[in-house]
Length: 112
Length: 115
Image 1 (cartoon, rainbow over the protein chains, first blue to last red):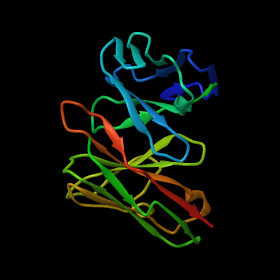
Image 2 (cartoon, rainbow over the protein chains, first blue to last red; image 1 turned 90 degrees about the vertical axis):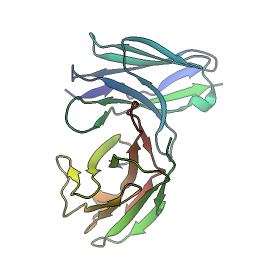
Image 3 (cartoon, chains in turn purple, brown; image 1 turned 180 degrees about the vertical axis):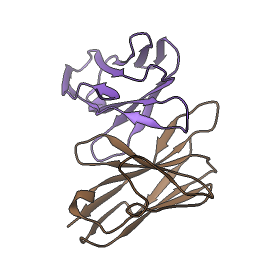
């Protein structure tokens, strides 16, 4: 079992729709969760961080965390073609130094 | 967040040679990391660059192949030694934000092609 799992996609949604990206993790003690966006040929850029169960909203983005189910998701409302990218879920392990574990990423394609 | 630069941005190298990648941050940071992203893959942590001491390497990565320096709190280098085509990847430097957040931010990356 991979430590952080994501559906590789591509996830194809029409412009204006809600894109839902999902991620599960295996370390039940994980405390910090991050979503990064990576355009082709570019480095990852942070979209959202979430630490507590529930929803966290920032503009068109909402991160959802359910620690009991070991599940974190990212919703993108009113999807735009410019949102087309690979979205990486990252989880920080507990204990020791600050190591981020990345999922394989989900490729999102927003079509006009 | 800190501004991170990397040099070179890309390079094409011959098998058996070595390349040193530089990472510069515009502010002092405690934690710096080096990642590798192979074509079509996600990010894999190579090592944590520790200021004033030896880097902490992840399983599968060794100091002889990927020596790292961290002479101060704003600069680090990663050397890819005795390169083979399998080393063709994007190499990324990242830094962790100061408390109370623990967010990592990435540099622009170095795209390495080994022939």
